Image 1 (cartoon, rainbow, N blue to C red):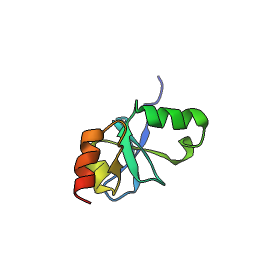
Image 2: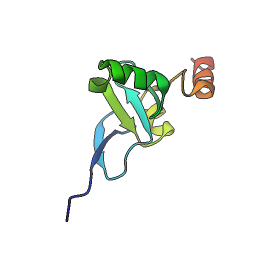
Image 3: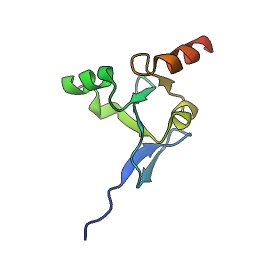
Image 4: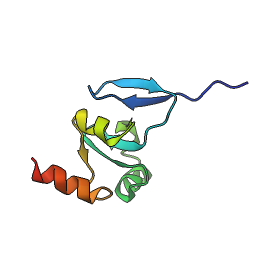
Length: 87
């Protein structure tokens, strides 16, 4: 019998925590932004190799926003426009 997979997610206070459920959104710690796991911009950055070290994961959009991250303009354009209008 194998051990359950454990994921590290970011909480609303910005601190990491362990979860048995994978995150639904990925983010970049230095740029303080989040987006879909299949975001074309993030996947290009990952392919170049400079992104993975700063990658973080969130359970949902509300948690990412509460932790101080902004939506990605590429994969979440409507959410980004709302965020931009309020900043």
